[in-house]
Amino acid sequence: MQPMTPALFDSLVLCKPYFDRHGLIVAEDDGHIVGFAHAGFGPNAEGSDIDRSTGVVCQLQVAHRDGRDQIAKELLGACDRYFRHHDTRRVFGGINAAADPYYHGLIGGSQPSGVAVEDVWLTQLLLENDFAAVDEHLVLHRQLAGFRPAVDRTQMQIRRTHHVNCCLDPPSPTWWHACTWGHTERTGFVLQDRQTGSEIASLVLWDCEPIASSWGVHVIGIAELETVASANQENTALFLIGEALRQMQSRGVTLTEVRVPEIQTSTLQLYSRLGFEEVDRSITYLRTLE
Image (cartoon, rainbow, N blue to C red; front, top):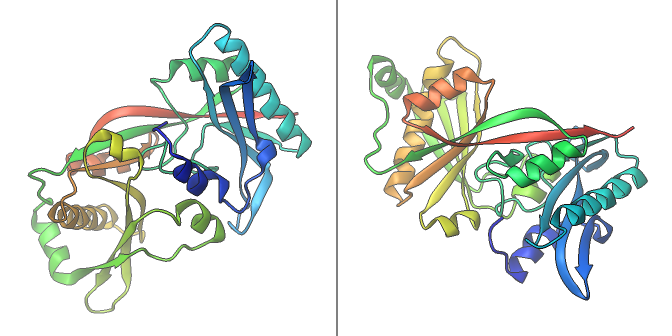
C-alpha cells in the first residue's frame, strides 16, 4: 500500500457512506499501534447497496517485529468474528472487482485484483487460515514512448467507417460504482459507426492516483472495456484501445496498465498485439464461512 495522508484516508475510507468503524480493527502494544485489519463488504447484484453476505479483508498490515504472525492471526480472527456477526457467507482476501469498498487508488493498480504474488507473507497467512485461490490476474504494462496504433487493412477500414468520441468523467452506472470510482479522474472513449451512430465498443481509462505518484511516472489504467459481440470484435477493440492510448500519449501519459484474468486468453492476445508485457501477477483468495 502507498503512503497515506489523513486527507487520503478520509477520502478513500472514512467518507464512504457504508463505513463502519467496527470493521476497522487495530492491534496495540503498550499504547502503540502495531497493526490493523479492515473488514468490509461487497455490493448487491444491482450495485444499489452493500451486501453483507459477501465480505472482504481489505487490508491487513502488521509492523515487522517479534510476534508478527501471531498478531496477524489475531487480526484475522477479529475480522472473522465481525463477519459472522453480520451473517457473512463468503470472504475475499484482498480487494477485487467483486468487492472493493475501500482503498481504491492506494492499492490494486489499474484494477483491484486480490493479493500480489510477491506478497509472500500475506499469501501464506491467508492459505494457513482456510482461504483458497480462486482467480489469477496478469498485470500488463505498456510504455507509451514511441507508441503507435496497429496499422493494417482491417484497422484502416475501421477508421474509415467509424469514429471515436471522448468523454471526461463519464457518469457512474450504479450507486456502488459512484462510491468506489467517483473520486477518480476517468476518461471514456466510445467507438461509433459513422452511418448508424450505433456504439460498437467502449473503453474507460483512469488516472492512477495516488498509487502512481510513488512510481515517478504519469500512469493511466484501463478500467473497463466492452465490445458488441461480432466477428470483428477483436479488431474493433484493438482500434479503440490504440486510438485512446494515442490520445493519452499526446497528453503526456507515459505508462498504461491493465489487469486481465489468466483464463481470458483472447484478451491477453489482444493486449499483446498492442505491445503490453507482463510485469506481475495477483491472486484472489476466498473463504467460505459455515
